[in-house]
Length: 279
Picture (tube, rainbow, N blue to C red):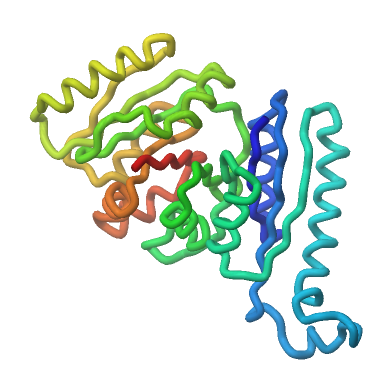
């Protein structure tokens, strides 16, 4: 059974990510934990004053969130009554990433699914600030769902590898689960600085050929193109349904945002991004 964390701020982007998760995990035994995180700065003194005298500030802040989560869960239970889904709600009054970290640990979360939250700054155009912080700070596989993305089964999955990184099987289970469940074809893209083929790169390719031998896969490379632009171009040309990549803290992530402002903005997360972590 999988434990899936679904953070929500009740926005359309969050609802879209929840819908993605329901469709993505169909016919699996899953427990979904819907999490809403409230911040004191979201409320004014007047909001708290309307609460009964015997109600704590904490209860006042989260009571409305609990009601909204209950409605969402009832709707999901009704719509997906034919699935082996269990739903739980979590409300927290904390910093967003701290609340995520606590939920991941206490609920033994296998995967986080969340929508981008509409950030427009160039440095956050791909994920949005909350999603980006989760990817950077929380050591848990995450699928980031683009705004207004319409669900489709991931028949073609892109596995992107940056030029400084090497293939590893540590933490690759979410990618393998996706490919196996959806019978996906795999496109392996190496983003390179030049045409040189090193011994390490040769060994990586040999390892991947063996590891993915039971999967329909092909190898590709793009040379001397900014990472975000390279991925975006490949996604469009090869009609990719999902991109998967490893994030090693501030390595690939930093390079993902390097390059011209145009290349960053043009990326815009066209397909869901599966982010995996390795040590």
